[in-house]
Length: 345
Image (cartoon, rainbow, N blue to C red):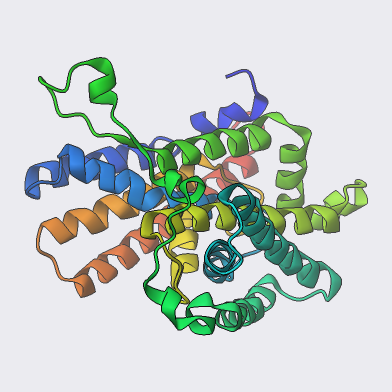
């Protein structure tokens, strides 16, 4: 890669997560029945692409020493806006899609303004908006306002078309010899967003400024960087990603519920941390959280097929998160010792 920040792939520990993902996938392919099938891989790609997108949005906030606890509620808000606009207002799908994304981006922007304008801790600000956005979802719920719509699916082709699958086996003419998984459109959307976010972070001045602010906000302010503006931008991008994920979820479910996105904020944070994004800010990538999201998916789907109860799955997921945090702390201390070593030692 020609970009300077591409060197992050050569940092100590950069290969640990891909290696662990490969080993985990290989283990369940052997141990769990029906895990390594085309259908299950399709479910993994479609079922966790939206988690990866929300995790990328969460990464913007964490890179700047923040956190966004409201992303799950923003997903529900964008989903309900799409539901109301489609089934109550009867807007065409091409208008519903940008409207829902705009609502989510506006909600994320409000988070940033609360952090900057009122000087609130990100944890407190987004915890408050989590409750507020959830309340707003119930207030505008088309399922509550028009109960008959609770059983009416969204059928607009612009919206449900997001749940499209591309049969690469048929395209390549090899479906008679090998069963290849179909590629969900949601997975391709996630890959495009990943490429855009990683390029922004690695190859642009904006990305360098975000890392500089996350590394030392006061030094960045003294250097003339518009810290407040970048913080608002980071939360707006987090909302944008949540809005895109909401549309993919609505297309998959053909409806939106008040509980849409419940607990998604914790899963997104876990994926980001597992993916190596430093909670102290200023370090991380976007491919790491994406891989972290799919690692969680592999573990949960593999354990389900292996017959492990949901309670044990939650325990093991927590153990993976603790292990990721412990590894991050170990790598950070290792880098600190390396920087502290005397010249010529």
